[in-house]
Structures are given as structure tokens and as C-alpha cells.
Image (cartoon, rainbow, N blue to C red; front, side):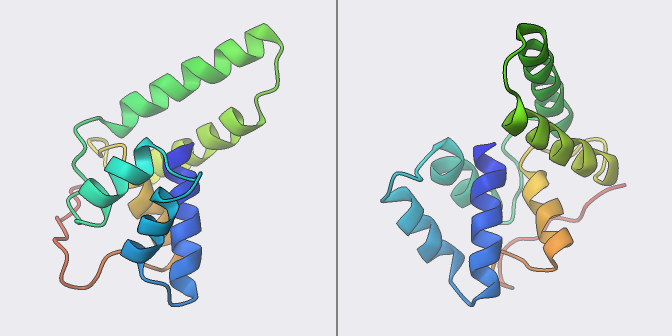
Length: 127
């Protein structure tokens, strides 16, 4: 959820001409700081490598388990369900071997806006 939320905020900021690295610095200096903003975005997304080492399909499996447990417990699952739907859509459109941070690449594609400068490493997606 944190990865998707931070990515959405940054993609929106990008639409208004804000620098992703500066946005990330501000997020990490505030209560918005989280693992995704401290590690995944700077190390694997802004660098253009998209190589965190954890498969998107495994993240989706974990999200499915979590939302199933939420449903079984009868508790609210609005955020879990929304996150699951987002990862399901990304998983359907990205290569089967995609890393979990590639959900950000998918969000960028939906928005038509990159978070990386043109000089960042852009590995080729394999079908």
C-alpha cells in the first residue's frame, strides 16, 4: 500500500513539474516516510532498475492472503481490497517475471508520466 500511495503522490507531483528526488526527500523528512519511500523508490524506481528482488506475483499472493484473512475476520478491508485490485491489474499487464516495484512502472504507464530523468537506466521489459 505504501509503495502505491507514494508512487501516486509522486506521479501527481510530476504532473505539476515537481522533481521526484525532491518530492521523495520531503516525504522522507515528514510523517509520510515509510519503507517504500526510503528504499524501494530511490534504490529501485528512481534508479530505473526495478530490481528489488521480490516478484510481483509473490507480492500479489501476499496481498490475496491478507485480504482473505481480513474478509474471514469480518473486518474492514477497503485499503487491502483497493491495493489488491491495483496489483491484479498490474500483474495482468506486466511480464510474468516482473519485480514487485514494477507496479510503479505500470502506474507511470497509466498516467503517461515517468518519475525518472531521461538518463536513468531503463531495462527492457520482457514479455
